[in-house]
Image (cartoon, rainbow, N blue to C red; front, top):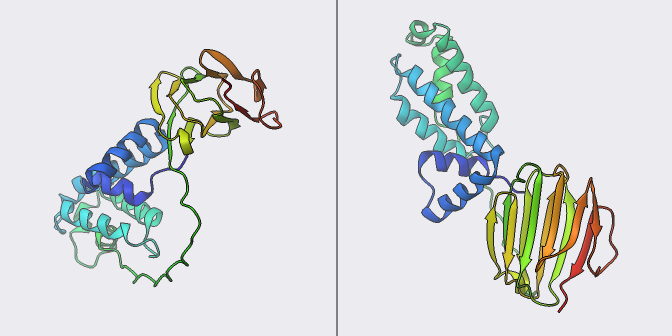
Length: 258
């Protein structure tokens, strides 16, 4: 599962994402605890620093922090990027919390320098020119759609209803925490419905559906029109439908029959 990058999370925190990107990011956050935790950490860090800086005579904290964050998103190659910058910000908050407010008000003091570096704009290197890619006459990749959820109590069901005959279904055991289902080719127009520990794929055309079942799930099944085709037992897959190609303990592929 691809996580949201730091720039996207920061833009979301600043309220700067376009509406479509914001909705996509919020949908991802609803099912991704790692990204949600990172966003909460960014907001908590800067809220704490803003409250601390309000007690010393430095630039208005909100404006300074926002300027710093916007610049940081463009500074992927800068020495003061991402993690180093957040560590510096947390150090400034910690020293202020330990009673360094008076020292921070003295021009040139080490604490003053620390705070100013924590909120100062990040130097941005000019982007290097990127050569234009060669023109390709290969056909465009088929469109794809997908969804992911967490298991419910360690259990999950992936249900395909109204699938076209010939639909290829690829199922595997993954090392991630989420149940992931994607549809490509003629199946990309399928509709998805979700519930606790359940993903339903409706009216998939004769393309391909790929399913990743987390190894940590204690029970998982793949059903087609009420019939169980694949069941996860421990870390192995037991196949009960017609196999389209050789199956392994953790991966199989089958086709939906008439």
